[in-house]
Structure formats: structure tokens, C-alpha cells
Amino acid sequence: MQKAKSNNIVWHQSTVSKKDRGKLFGHRAAALWFTGLSGSGKSTLAHEVEYRLFKRGCHTYVLDGDNVRHGLNRDLGFSQEDRQENIRRLAELAHLFTDAGMIVLSAFISPFRADRQKARDILEKGEFVEIFCRCNLKECEQRDPKGLYKKARAGEISEFTGISSPYEEPENPEIVVDTDSDEIDGCVNKIISCLERKNIISSLSM
Image 1 (tube, rainbow, N blue to C red):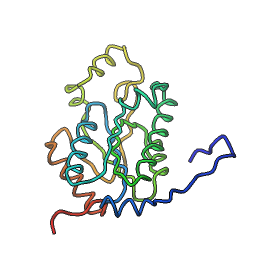
Image 2: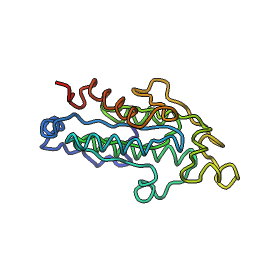
Image 3: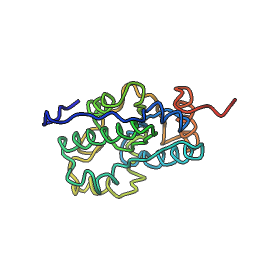
Image 4: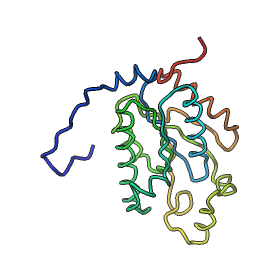
């Protein structure tokens, strides 16, 4: 974890613990980290999973890559250094959400393994759930919901992941969903089942 620049700051412990919040909420805290190429369905899937969890009474929030860049990270571009800082800030934000006992769903490309590992290290052990939204580049380009691949191919966007900048696939993610072949309901069910097995949420099948 990056050391703070000032030595004159002290972390204040909350009177209400994460365990207390877990008992109140009825679920454990977790950071569901959706990663994959642009157009692989990260945001769509994150919101569908959140909706399913919300209906079960879970306390949730989605951190979407584009949304965060409108405010918190509006000063960052897409250079490798800025991407690293983007993920560091988002991981710290996810840590605050999990400290509050919530299930935070983070939908970012986060293309580099080292940055995702740093994010995992920031979270408490067992709270980081990496979800690889696997989708081939051809399918992502055909979808191109934001028209970004077209711009990247035309040279209008530099350092675009999958075209002019690499995407490093996760080596040992907790969950892999094939969003280019599986229906969204099936992907959601797979994630929910994993969260039940990890006892992050309780199983409905009693």
C-alpha cells in the first residue's frame, strides 16, 4: 500500500465495526471487481448483479469506470501512469465501501494484472472477488456501444485497450463469465452462486 506523504495523520477506528454492520445487513462485505475489454459487458453485468442482490436486501453500490471519471478521477487521462492511479484510487474507494459493510461492484477495464493485484492487496483478504468478463475482441468491436473501437481504428484514440494498448487477462480470477456466448441471466446466476459458496451472501435454497 502506498505510504501517505504526511506523518501527522492517524487512522480513527469506527465505534461501529464491519462485523456489526454485517450482522445488521445480513451479508458480508465484498468488492466484486469486473474486468474485461471495452464492450465485454462489465457495466451491464455489474448492474444486473446489483439488482439481483438489492432484491435480496443487500446493501450495494456500483462504481462504473466512466462515472467515476466524471468526478473523482476527472483529472486523469489514459496513459499507463494515469491508469495505474485510476485503479489505485478506485481500490481505495472500494475499500471504504467494504469497510462500511457493503457489497461494492466495480466495473473497470483495469487492463494490467499488476494493478489488479495492487487493488486486491488493498482490500482485506477474502473480500476481493475478481470477475473476468471474457469476450473476444471481434465481438467487442461488433458491439462497440460507445463507438470507441471505430475511433481507435481510425487513430482518433491513442492507447486504447485491445487495439493499441494491451489487455492482460486474469490468470486466476474467482469467476469467469463468457459474455460473448452465455446469456446474461446465466452469467448473473454464476456470480450469485459463487457469492453463496463464499458465504458472502446467504443461500436462498434452505
